[in-house]
Length: 147
Image (tube, rainbow, N blue to C red; front, side, top):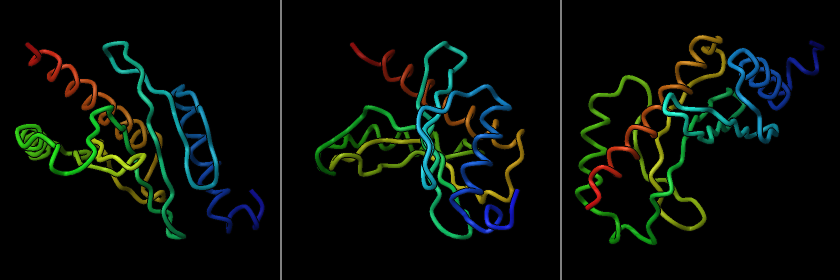
């Protein structure tokens, strides 16, 4: 890599994510200097979008799998669902559930924050798989709860 590429956080982000995604055969759907969208398949066969955002020059990354569980405002968020998510958070070693603003709605997502310098292929894969499997398991659990 050139000195310019080494010093440009956007280029470092892109090249690192491309290399790590390739190691796991994860398809890059979209990539920029700030965000990447990867297609990752859960063990169930369901495919999920794994998003990775670069937040600052120190290369802090946020990994996220966003669900379709969206609400117009905090009043609409079912308290029982938040309790379920918090209970799951207490058992997780990678990632956590939260509400994120997506298209002006509060949406449940499972996320993990990490510095890019701490990532190797194994750790990158572990984060991505854990988030995807957690989302898949949670959505399956909710489907089973439906009457």
